[in-house]
Length: 196
Ligand code: HEM
Image (cartoon, rainbow, N blue to C red; front, side, top):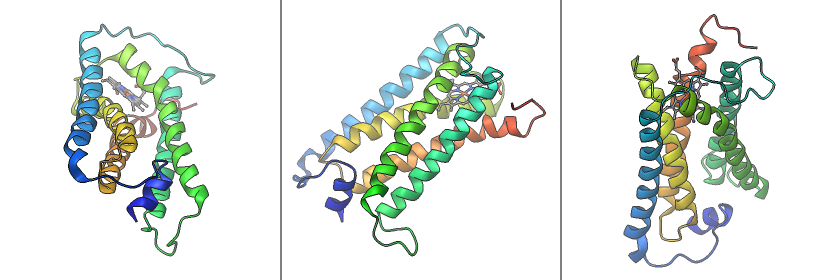
């Protein structure tokens, strides 16, 4: 089972002993922490510009952010479903065909790319808002999301980590994006602001 999932994840090969696990776990956690803390420090220290960076054809920055992050959310839901399928946890679908792994990888990569202009705009133009619990939680989850994503990328390339660690990292990335979306885009969908 473990080897099959590693093959799907693109890191095929025999698993070495457990000796390297503490080092691999430390590398993963340290990477995540450094990325998340660096973004948080930048968000706090940098003077928020309040200016738009790019709207990519949307009528405004907020609309661009809301729609790109909603598209990213749909793609991470695809990631969740394909991950469950690959792990044999999707009811009625015991064995995942090869294309499921490709879809998993691509949906994750595209979702991540879609968050970049949004996260960049948040960090550069708005910084770390602390006005309400929602905004504070949004900023924290946004920073930790990038940390967790970086940690998952390092974890995927490690041959020492157990497969469940990859599942935990993937679940963390998914959960954080859901929190980021619920504390921003969902809130705007519920408001009277024009969404197009
Ligand atoms: C995955 C990364 C992120 C995504 C997808 C995301 C998405 C969004 C969206 C859709 C909005 C609503 C549109 C707007 O108000 O402009 C928003 C607002 C905001 N974001 Fe982010 N964001 C991310 C990361 C961050 C980070 C890292 C920070 C700062 C540490 C941050 C700070 C803010 C602030 C202060 C607001 C305004 C909230 C308000 O006043 O209602 N965001 N974000």
